[in-house]
Amino acid sequence: MPAFTATAPGKIILFGEHAVVYGRPAIAAPVNQVRARAVVSADPLAPSGQVHVLAPDIGLDAILDELPADHPLKMALYLTLEELGLGRSPACTIRVTSTIPLAAGLGSGAAVSVAVIRAYTAFLGRHLDDGRISALAFEVEKLYHGTPSGVDNSVVTYGQPVYFQRDQPIEIFHVPNAFQIVIGDTSVASPTAFAVSDVRKGWQADGPRFENLFDAVGEIVQQARQAIEAGQAGLLGPLMDRNQELLEEIGVSSPELEWLVDAARAAGALGAKLSGGGRGGNMIALVEPGQAETVARALSASGATRTIETWIGKKP
Image (cartoon, rainbow, N blue to C red; front, side, top):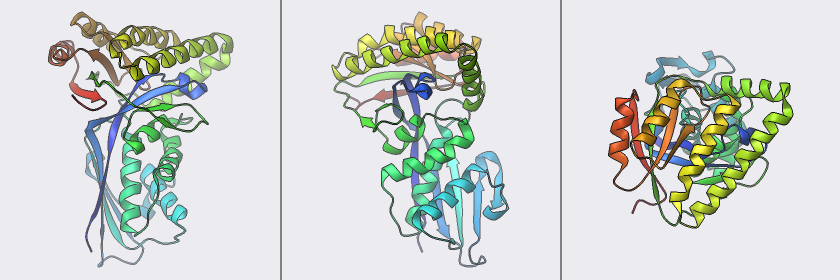
């Protein structure tokens, strides 16, 4: 029996993180330069129903039933069985690898879930559409983020730029003129759940102030979508800068992020901001064609442990 393989990309949030948890829109896009991969193969010599899970990147080598009930991989596989109406899995081995940095705002958890669900479903000889895959991955996201918005699993599943608003249909939108982004990694691990929890505490303590901040972020998202769909990506730079200011006011930035944001702007980036949960992880910078390497070098010289150059839309 052949092995079944599926991959899923990383992601960046261009605009709208944190406010999206409170009903405002966000714009996110896949990052295909980094991916999670799941390979599922039959294990005819193993006892019936035994699932062997290997994830060498995190040192995991275990039998599925022995993992805690709240382990993300266990939850993804059990939810898939339940969704397909199957009570028991054939004996198999599942190997998970990823080039997406962990706890860095690039959607590593969602990408792993989507890749695993897709590969496992194919191994079982079934099919789930993107909507159902995204919904299952969203349930797993709750383990990572506590109160996730749903944006990570959406953009990772569909693999295209999305306009996302909670409890609204996903909108995949057209990017008529592709634009380039440079991603800089602070190397500071920052699980999104912690930042989301702290923002919620701030919102509970001073709701009117945070609601105003979220409204301002939402307006930026609307302006950004209009600029993207009009093919005027150059207008996104000042919007990124303003979004970063608001994220600082919300309390999810960090000195390391701000250092890289300033370095990118000084190197000629049109705009820059943190991306994702904040408090560490990654930042993004909008660059003109031909400028990416200069900005990437500046980020590396300023302490970024990794840079990624990616295009939003079809690369010209």
